[in-house]
Image 1: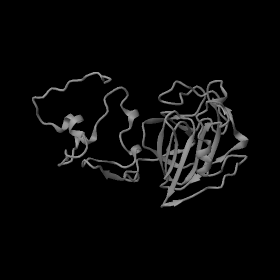
Image 2 (image 1 turned 180 degrees about the horizontal axis):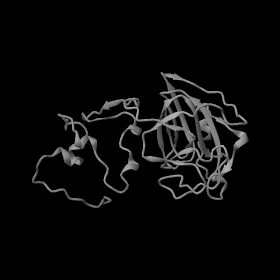
Image 3 (image 1 turned 90 degrees about the horizontal axis):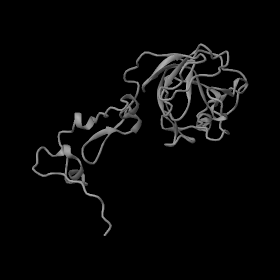
Image 4 (image 1 turned 60 degrees about the horizontal axis):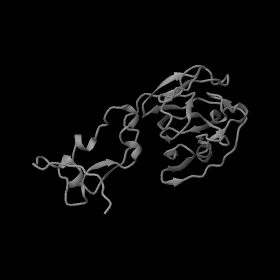
Amino acid sequence: MVFLRDNFYGTRGVLSSVLAFVFVLAVHADIERPLQGKPAGVHFRRQGETGIFTPGVKLFTDRPYTLKSVPEWLEGKPFRCAAITHGELLVASEGVVTVLTPVPDAEGAASQVAALEKAGFEWVEGESPFQLFGNGARDCVRVYQRVMQAGTRLQFGKWIVLVAFEEASDPTGLFEIHKQTLYNGIVLEKNPCDRTDMTAYGDKPLPVPYLEQPPELIPIDIGRQLFVDDFLIESTTLQRKWHKAVIV
């Protein structure tokens, strides 16, 4: 599993790479021309849609930015239009993975360059940077590539654009999800990224899985949940009232 994440404000990427419990530090080397070979087959887990990479196309589902310019070898290729903040995919068949991310030295750029390079991606130096959208330096991008094996899972933050891939059919069961039992008996996915997709519901209320399928027994003598979780109380004549804080 390879994680490409930023902090909440999308400043810099932080990388953790775990493959079969072996930590790998990849040696980075730039390349002049794009890698040759079949594009990777990928399956997307988060909300989004696959489009064609041509000038004028909308790049993100949650931003109005449209493609301004594109290298000839990438024009007309499929790309993933998804949320700018995060995404997740699974490599279903081995091949070349191609991503775009802002240049690292532009002020205000939410670049994933450091994380990509640590993960073994190579900068296609002869083909970038180029102005992906807008007019500012922080909207110029580099092209990075890497051959990835089937079964590799990628999670990334703000922001990258995935382009030139083959969309795979749903590989049910290939996304390995580990769960944990909390102290109160509620079972949740261990990795927060495996929980509810926050981008899928817009302004609508989010589902609460542990209310829809609660455990048979929820202990109430641990912590303070009895005072804050109304769903634990079947019936009561008490009324909840709210008060402003008072400095004593």
